[in-house]
Amino acid sequence: MFERIFTPNSEAEKPAPIHPRKGVIIGAGQVGMACAYSILIQDCFDQLILQDIAKERVEGEVMDLLHGMPFMSPTELKAGTIAEEGQDADIVVITAGAAQKPGESRLNLVERNITIFKNLLSDVVKYCPNAILLIVSNPVDIMTYVTLKITGFPSSRVIGSGTVLDTARFRSLLAKKMGIDPRSVHAYIIGEHGDSEVAVWSTANIAGMKLIEGKWENLPSTEREELTALFEDVRNAAYEIIKLKGCTSYAIGLAVTDIIKAILRSQQRILTVSSLIDGLYGIDDVCLGLPTVLNEKGIFKIVNLTLSEMEKEQLQHSAQVLREIFAQLKL
Image (cartoon, rainbow, N blue to C red):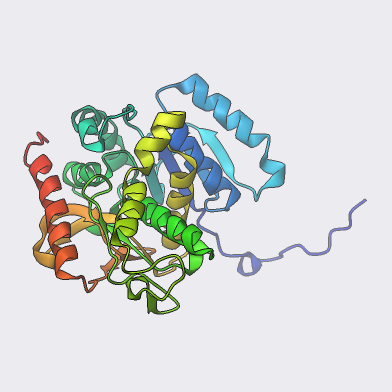
């Protein structure tokens, strides 16, 4: 029989209440569940709500995950809705949307996904007015802009997953080529999460040594065609994965978890998320991916990278591609 060792005998001795970290994932498809699994095993939230129009399936997903709770840090996991279980969430992750078909560009998804967002964002505004919104649905830069306009939330609290995954792919392929750990590669993909994205070769480095200086084995600066081919592998990675397995899921789940940890733990971490750009590089009123400092408030500041003239022109072109789509939106 256990002996009671300590019992608080006054209100003053009771510990202060702890605000539980609450998250909601709207959309429990392949991407949403990859996010949920990664978030759970990395102990991000105290409460996590999964919302999906396919109610029976999401209940089955929750049951399956709950059976694994003895192997993880405790998290209160439920199938539910923003209007009920998800009220006053700290972060709302939106992965809901039409699935990208083989051969279909992310921009082709716009009209279908705007209709979906108009329906679900009204409840988000009503029941989670102080939440940080993390948009994952494609085309992510456009859907981040759509969310910003529909909700009226401050731009610091409307964040897209941007080119975080593209940047990870870039670093992974570079690291594999040179036989080093991807975490030791410092390189960015910026702009649209899509066909007009930009590889920032001018600042890419390992241990402070720029890659384009040609001093790294297997990556000589003279073989520009090889660098172009590597970037094309990064840019086309999603199309290739979708052709082979139907969707991308695991890597974006890990990317979303890194963004969430940076916010909840106020890490001041730099990630290439998508957010509203006003004034940088001559770009205004566009959401796209740039290196951004994240903390508990969401977006703290955007890093003003020193780009080459070619990279700056490519980024401006990427912004123009998105701006032309924005101009056609009926919000």
